[in-house]
Length: 65
Image (cartoon, rainbow, N blue to C red; front, side, top):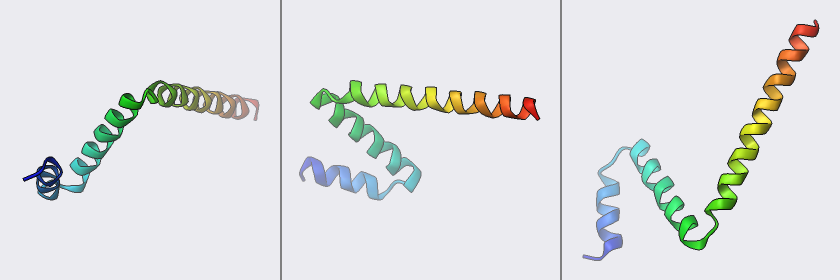
């Protein structure tokens, strides 16, 4: 049995929630192997900062009313 077949067999026995975790981990490994992980981490940090800026703006608007 090939590695892909072994993985498929294990995945088919898992609930969707765990399958998603396996997918996320496989994606992480793929990005890391290509050297693209740093770009993804930078994007995530930028999105988190943007979210915090939006929350701050919302709080300031609520206080102004």
